[in-house]
Image (tube, rainbow, N blue to C red; front, side, top):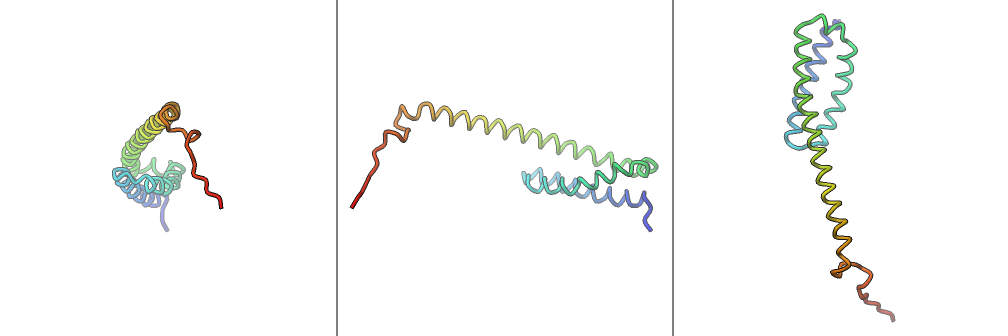
Length: 121
């Protein structure tokens, strides 16, 4: 039978694996994979959080859990910066669309003045 500490060590190893995959996916710009990996990591993090007493008694386990926190924090920061960059690009695109909508009709860009071919018969 597995002891609580052994179970926490096993879960921490699985979390380390997922965090490594998450960092690689983030580096490759595969945000869908990052999301999937974060969803997989969530129950592991929750389990380790709930089992705080078992991890508090084992120094090696505490060190492993602490070591996982640093790359996850870097990943979170990188994701946040990517989100901000995407928001800024989206706002620039919206601004350009508004500008084009304002000046387009003056240069024949509007659809109201266009002649249409109408065939009957």
